[in-house]
Amino acid sequence: MTRKKPVVIGVTGGSGSGKTSVTRSIFEFFQGHSILMIEQDYYYKDQSHLPYEERLKTNYDHPLAFDNDLLIEHLNALLRYEAIEKPVYDYSIHTRSEEVITVEPQDVIILEGILVLEDERLRDLMDMKLYVDTDADLRILRRMTRDIKERGRSIESVIDQYISVVRPMHNQFIEPTKRYADIIIPEGGQNHVAIDLMVTKIQTILEQKSFL
Image (cartoon, rainbow, N blue to C red; front, top):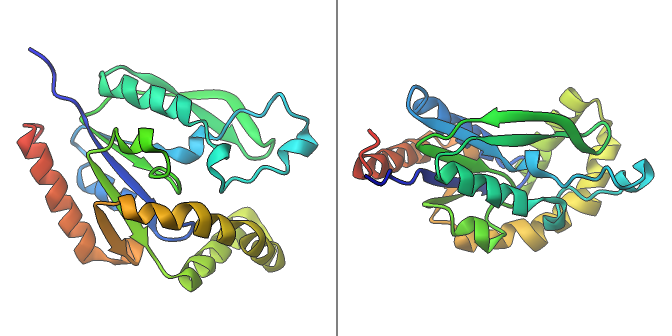
């Protein structure tokens, strides 16, 4: 008998939108069931062939920064219920680490990242596509708080990066992917009503596939 294909849920939104909070809320609700998360951030391209000075110029908010070919290869393997060796990106050296993480296949795969809806090949693998839509002023405040507290950056460097890179990349590449979303969730992880509705919808899909 042919085994059912896992359910793939794409979750996207701008930096600081709350997409990670939404993803974690969904994941935690279904924890104990057969579910896994794949973060697009793990799939930045290997840059070991470039000098360190060149790697410093990497624009991590541009579609070309991601190795979607490998990500798609890994997703297809998981859809065949095959384990993968997920890469690990080392931001201290701006390239891939030698470390990998073994990921076992599950019935539900949540794919999370700022540009998971930008590539049509990725969209075609998804059963459900979510866009977390949060106002720009709130996104920059969240990003600023995170980068200062967790990454030791100055206010000036965060603002400069936001104005020169993050904001234009969001407007050019991330915001337009909203049109591909099946569901738009305003205000991210704070929108408990929307998350509850999402959980209910996912439960329905899983029941239809006899996973629950």
